Length: 80
Image (cartoon, rainbow, N blue to C red; front, side, top):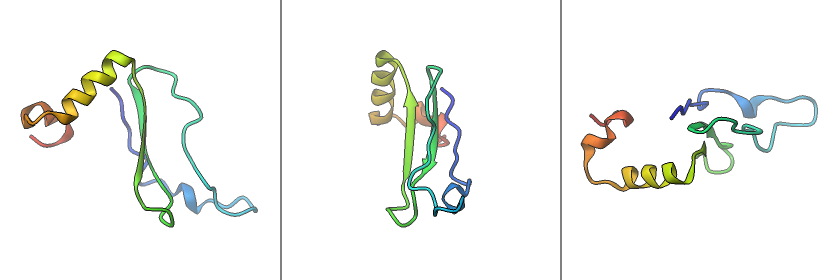
């Protein structure tokens, strides 16, 4: 899975003459296992959007991994 972070990009600071964007994100996710971590507007909640394209079987595996109590399985999240 490839999941680049766009958190440092100043998307919402852009102004093309009609004000800042209301939303910024990818128009499409072409490849299985691809995705993006995208910031929301600071005025909204300052959170993140995680957009993923996964096959159903891989979504279930990711769900199980994220809900797992075993930190060794989460080493790729930087918890090692």
